[in-house]
Image (cartoon, rainbow, N blue to C red; front, side, top):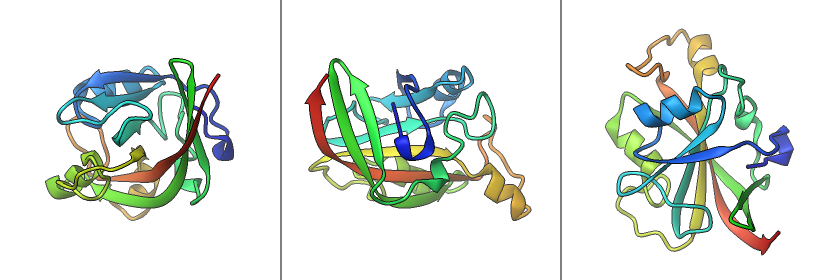
Length: 164
């Protein structure tokens, strides 16, 4: 994965079966790479109809997604997989609370933000912690896996793809 606007280049993304930030995803992220949940409760692969979810650390383990909050609408997220480059463009930001199952469901939904909606296009969710913002507000809560209360999600849509 590359995100030119924030200097991310060639970040490895490892697929796993599960949901965003569950135990397998956390173990993958702790190696300094990004994780992509797949399957019935997770997301889809790059270029597929639905929500391609990628999570990664912002304040630890090499901080690969340190500057994700700085992404603006219109910035590009480039995913290279199986000889194809998928170009997603950021369209909005969604912040969710890990304390609220309904909000976690919005992050993992096939249409980001809309659990139960049927997807009609390939979308991407880049998700990382809001530790800095939570701590600045005096919120030091975290779950059993060390996730802070809030996640910052940058949502995008696939605009182009081409062979490499």
